Amino acid sequence: MALKVHFYRFGFLDYSKEFNSLIDADIIFSQGSDIPPGADYEVLVHPRPSKDWLDASPNLKAVVVPWAGIPEETREILSGYPDISLHNLHHNNFNTAELGFALLLAAAKYLVPLDQKLRANDWRPRYEAQKAIMLRGRTALILGFGEIGQALAAYCTGLGMKVIATKKHPESYSGELNVDIYSNDKLAELLPKADVLLIALPLTEETEDLIGEEEITLMPEGSILINIGRGPIVNQHALYNALKSGHLHSAGSDVWYNYPKSKEERENTPPADLPFGELENFVLSPHRGGMVKEVEIQRAKALANLLNSASRGEPIPNKVDIEAGY
Image 1 (cartoon, rainbow, N blue to C red):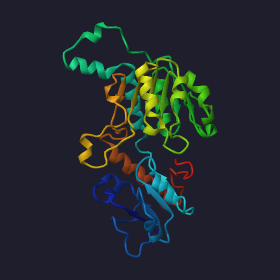
Image 2: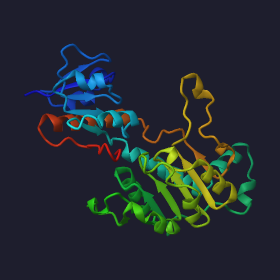
Image 3: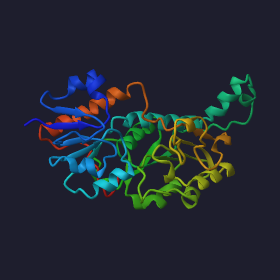
Image 4: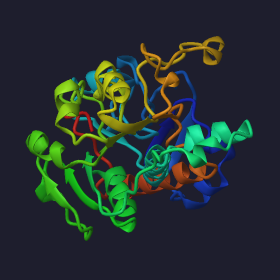
């Protein structure tokens, strides 16, 4: 029997030759921002479905959020529908990991202030005491050892770093990376070993404010913090103070505390409540970790793989634990 899928305002059916070439021929698609009459879709591709969307089709078995990460309101509403599974896409895992690694290198080498000075024809930093540090031989602690965390681990080990990581269920990892993996409750024991802290966690009740003043103080003096998870995982006041005091050598972030709420606000919205942009030892990126030229093709391939699995009666990839949030 053909699988019926509805897209909510999603353009694969209009423009993606890649998607159409990969998808099984017997899948029936519909799309539109309004609930179709006589809705009978079995899979709904929608980032934030309302109760009306979930109730409209008596055949609905799965909801797919077409990106990495689950909106809180989606998680909350699906918690009331135990018979409907929730899935997302991991197509941008390497993209995000590469951005995190770029932030690490830029922070360790003080690349941004050096670039800014030389753009103004100022060579003086070349002859001053060096602020750049070497990463080879140092220890990186990765919080969140999912697909992004594992990609980061590969990059760090390739650079000659020792990697340790935390994972909710360490025993579930079956890869071949040379990484020591610990449970989340070992964080306080691991932070004193972390020359570099790389955060690749989702934002949940458990992870909000996970890294505060106490945790940063446990890190070695002169260490580096990189956040590609979500902004509020790190307490912004603790981070700012540690950078100002010099306890942290440097930091970088692609995720923030404040975001523009309209197109007009995009030109002038501070990303945090504190002036991180005034710190030369902080590297800022406007939440573009997954954004590369190839991202839509990556998304098409990932979604085609997910829907083909559903159509063939196989387990649907990337099932989200609604209670955990990822």
